[in-house]
Amino acid sequence: MAEIVDMIVLRLTAFLQQEMMDNVSDDTKASEVKAYRFQDSPLDLPIYVAVLGGSPGDTGFLDARIGYTDMNDLGLQIPSGEVGGGHLWWRRGRVKLGCYFIQGNLSQEDAAQKAHIIKGRAMFNIERCPVSDLVDDFGERAHWMVVTASTFSEGGGPENQYLWRGMIHWQVLTERPY
Image 1 (spheres, rainbow, N blue to C red):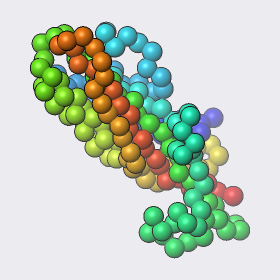
Image 2 (tube, rainbow, N blue to C red):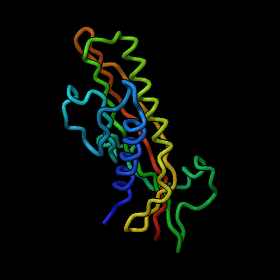
Image 3 (cartoon, helix red, strand yellow):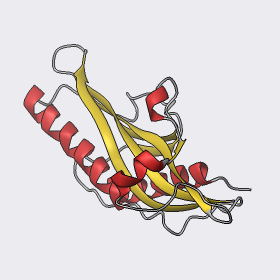
């Protein structure tokens, strides 16, 4: 059995592996792109990407049925649900990024530039990820993925070691049948 959010997470993970690892040959190449929680040491995998569904603790970013007030944001003029039809949902998740430049051979400016290239590549490719062919075992179909928000900042660390961490929020428009 397959459920749409899990299918989206796995598709996005595979797509980001290709676009952030396989197709990158410089020092902004991701060390690991994986589905769900990153549990390895960032000392061994200094540039990591973790793709997750949901956003625990953030009640403003839950999966949600699209209501009448949300339809204008989509440019659609259809009911949010009708007898014999289906209804639209936003399925939401995040991509966590970590860039641990701990080798001591980068300036703070170079580390910041590389970190932002990695974040930019992730944001660009999240929205390019094809999802419109995904249909789960319950008939829910994915249509379109967008990035809705991001945060990214430099954290603490010893001198000459620069740690960048952040999160990119995404959502996918889906349609559920009755």
